[in-house]
Length: 452
Ligand code: 2HG
Ligand code: ZN
Image 1: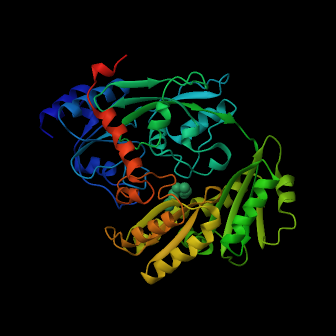
Image 2 (image 1 turned 180 degrees about the vertical axis):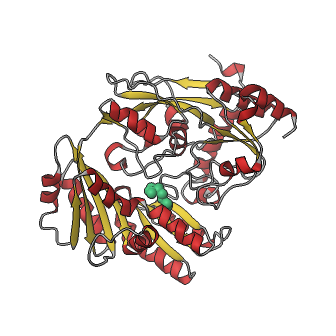
């Protein structure tokens, strides 16, 4: 890049942190699915908020579009260029301040990984309420941008419920700081809440004040073999009524487990296979095993069960669920295809009907469907293998089905570029106008008349 913008960016972050060599920029240019991406004008790696501010201001002055990027674990193309944008990587903003144990909170940079936040919280005798399989690479900034959910939503809520404060760089380079020093603050609009889930469309998140939760040292994981998704929904309802200690309820199918076993070489959990599996975890200050056993006692729907309380045993059961994404990618690659990933949510009572109808449409189209997800929120990870990367006819049919059932076309991964065409399915014209108005308001250069 031999233009004036390159010279300016190099002056801000140093030559080592303006990347243009295609061999080096490649990993910033394609998302995890391999379905979305494009060439970047360059990749810039600022070191701190001040540098992010200068970089964004320089890009605004040059009318150069910017794509903020965290750990690049997104699945909807929201953190990668489409062609010609400047990628602003937040990876170097990875500070994790000492945990404030009095207030149970921690201040972190956008580039801190989820795993780093977990480690810091655990060392202080606390925990962070958001967790999912990509924890070692996914960064706090990206999880805020997408309002990431994961496996603990039923216990602690999604990312928005953890964000006490936020620091972000607006489109013209100004730094918006809303510290979360006190957990109660009714002063004005909830800007941290607004930026959470805004996917880089309103500002570049550079740091956050995160709420921490008590650490639950005692855990039990049970993998339940079931005959149907309807049974999984019924068992979950029973568990929710019977115990306060439920900390995860993850659902997958026999088809998904077969793929995981084939791709990973793991031993099967049961002597025979079952149509549906529900992985439940209970956690608390003391061993919750007896409480879980009592809650499941006499539940005929449970055809078989594998239980673990020790760490390796729990991890072995979790692997059947957490390795789905990797196993599906392996299957897609083997057929030289990509997985179409539709992260949706449907009301729980409609889940069995959704699953049946989704299978019917995929069968008709000759595509392979694998579903799994976070049962308590009706959050289904719909993975379709078969159609070409740019053939979205089946995506459209499945998203329409979700909307007809009163669900969400994006439960926890965001809209990115994957879902923009279908926003109208669940957001009406007034809603979309209001969102566009907010974006326009934050995009304009400072309007002195608005400043108090
Ligand atoms: C998960 O829950 C992630 O494992 C990934 O959200 C989902 O691969 C997917 O479709
Ligand atoms: Zn998920």
